[in-house]
Amino acid sequence: MLASMGVHKSSYKGEPAETIHLRQFSDWLQLNVVDKEDWNAIRSCLSETLFCEGEKQPGAVKGCCKPPAYCGYELKNGTTWTVPKSGLRSKDHDCVTWSNDPRIMCYDCDSCKAGFLARIKNNWRKLSAFFSCLIAFLVINFVIGCCAFRVVEVHSGMRKGVSGESPRLQQFSDWLQMNVVDRQNWLGIKACLSETKICSSPEISPPARGLYRPIKNGCCKPPAHCGYKLKNGTVWTVPSSGLASRDHDCIMWSSEPNTLCYDCESCKAGVLSRIQEDWWRLSIVACCLIAFLVINFMVGCCAFRSTRAFDKYQRCGYQS
Image (tube, rainbow, N blue to C red; front, side, top):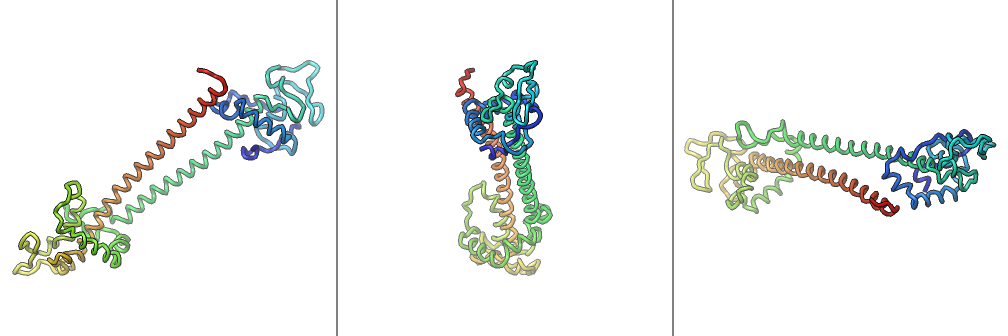
């Protein structure tokens, strides 16, 4: 038990202990650590283990093994303290409580309790510093990860083409092109687009239309710069003058419902644009969730501390 608090056996040879006063510590610590019930267990442990015998170890707990300096006890030999002829300089609780009996010592003194609280508080301070560094490390890594994610995902932070045009595949990073719309992955995405008949499904709720617009614009009709003409609601034809451009997307277009522009770069760009929007919303939700968890953790800690302190306060026989 003592070892878990970072407390080791300490010799009671030498000068009287410098006094650490119990009033230096909060009421919460006194009520939850060195109240009557808990201190009885600690004192029994000190007494049974002959805590004050052994090699000298520096620490605040020396208040348990020596009489307080202000009492005026004199050291008769290496282990015995005596009252001087002139009497004690003070007869407060700690001075009267002191005994040379190794099983009693100053274990009931306020200076002993204060020493334990000082050691525990010091250990808590070290733990707090450790957890603060850990939390800072996690937060920094989260922020760096989010920033790196955004830099990797979106080339130059561009979401749409110039002047509000549909996004182009070149606007997105090489990583996205290689890991999301590469040949192997795109076969599955294209099959999904074809099976769901997204281009022939006008029944899309108004809030979702904006989200699906990049996909519909890129996958369901030929690019505007190709020069195709709309013959009816679903068929596009090549004008008599020919196509205005013969780039990859213009050649890949087909009016077949299972083909359309699913192999066009504009379709891949539309899918990446939709994924980007989803990730952006997800990152906002994740940040809000983390903030919510941190706030709840802090509130829970405060509530637990207050409830436990009040319970101990009532159990010790005090009434407000």
